[in-house]
Image (tube, rainbow, N blue to C red):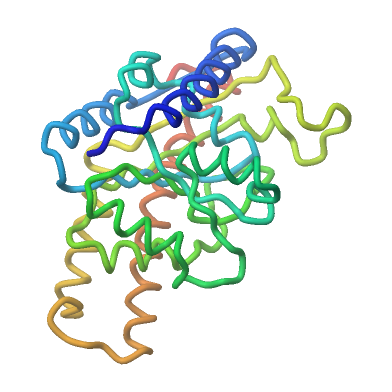
Amino acid sequence: MTKPPLLSTLIFSTIGLSSKVFLNFLCKDVKVVGLQRLLQRLEDVEEDGRGRGVLTVSNHISVCDEPITWGILPISHVLLRKPMRWTLGASDVLFTRPLFSSFFSKGQVLETVRGAGIRQEAVDKSIRLLDEGQWIHIFPEGKITQPSHSNLSRLKWGIGRMLMETRQIPTIIPMWITGFDQVLDETRGWPKPIPRPGKRVSITFGTQEDSAFIEDKIAVLLRERRWKEEKLSQADEDKLRSDITAIIKEGLERVGARVSGEVQKVKEGKEV
């Protein structure tokens, strides 16, 4: 796994520190579950060199999910130029000016064009990066959903294509976040760009069993449909892509349902 360039490290350090300050000092409560599993997997991939990539997938509940979520990473992870995530970002939101384009590109954001479909450069590059053993993080809904709940909206098929066309299935870690929809509520008033302090947020990484649930189902599907051995018709290829995307949705919602149940218990004043 390639280390980020120095300029990218500077951007990650600046944004990461700002995000860490917000989470540690301006949020009422921050609950993080399972982060060590991601860090250990990234450590393993770094030692292996070009190997099996890492794909984290999450629900999307506010414009600040990325990058504030990654304020949970240890500062040493960034400063020692450990592997950092690549992600996809909308062209009409993040890449509207040359300065913004340069900033987000150096911050390892792949420009994604809405409506351009699954066969665009951002998806092509994501596949190449996973084959190189890199870490990709995506919000497969492709849009913000508020209020947040454990049932996801329809996922974009781009993630299905990624998992069909990588040389081997990456480590897939489902994530579920809560509270960020209160940090930046879509109906908020002035000052609109400023994250609201005093909120409770949580970031939960799926267990090994959650990952296996997704990865094993996808592996069986690819084997049964003989994707690697035979050329499928367009209809069969589309169906396979759709079925893989549905597996991701099911696995992610499993984590969401578990987290939502725990959040409800906290609201009711019960132990979790």
